[in-house]
Image (cartoon, rainbow, N blue to C red; front, side, top):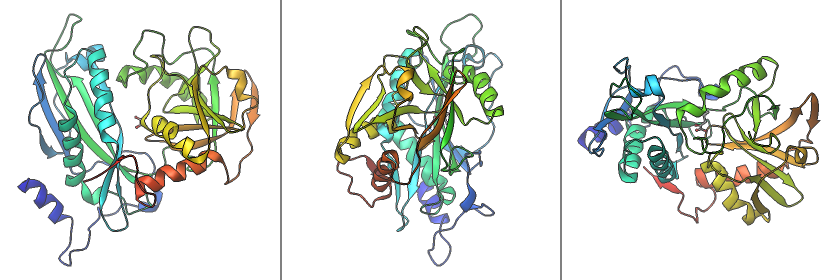
Length: 355
Ligand code: COI
């Protein structure tokens, strides 16, 4: 605690004003890594519990070449954001949900996991220690990346003998290079993101490298991201490489039902909860790709992405374009969500945690 007080104190100058990291263009933050000052690290054995971690200087870590994560992909990651409000108070959005999701993922990947309390405490410590990297209000947020992986050496296929839980952070602005402009999505009809019975429903690192091929190809052709279809029928929309997807028709908001192949995004779940406040009905169900044709809006949601409207979707060579305006329902939902996160709208659900 004394250590953290020193950190927090060192984020203020002699007048008591908040100090910010030097030479950062806070008006133009994208989603590139800006290494910050500290990270949180804790290790434990396969049959142990994570007990007491500590902060250390942000930097490279040492790993055995035979670490479980390097050889067999035994790893999970999370993403959550810390916000600075006008009065300099710091807030997190639903970090317990990330902890629970990591616990569910860890069970799937045969790893011990941090308790919710340890997870949230580690996130808070990381944010406080890197306080000077939290962007000024309205300029972005501090993206916090908790990772859990098999760090013990292994040769034959089996769970590793040792696990590391590590939390680092980076200031971020918009995820897509388009900024807040509408996204151009490409529907992939060759590769799939995940399959029934796989690990698509948890935030396993193994769900992300396999999409790089489709993503790179689509980006080279000018698309923002890729929308995947289910691997059984090749017909139902599932998820975008980096986020979940919703469609709006009339006053019905639909999103693919999670059946083990789709990540239960925290932004996704939050939009599902707040949409009825704005008079929208929500359905979680299988959504055939043809429904994109006459949707009023299609949009993406995620911690990194926020809420981002699709301006076009290209499927089998046909490009569908959506009407854009600043009255879009998805933007109204996003502004409600941001209002809760930034404190201008009452947080009736207890989603916000002050650090
Ligand atoms: C997030 O939204 O936090 C994610 O983990 C997605 C990632 C591809 C940036």
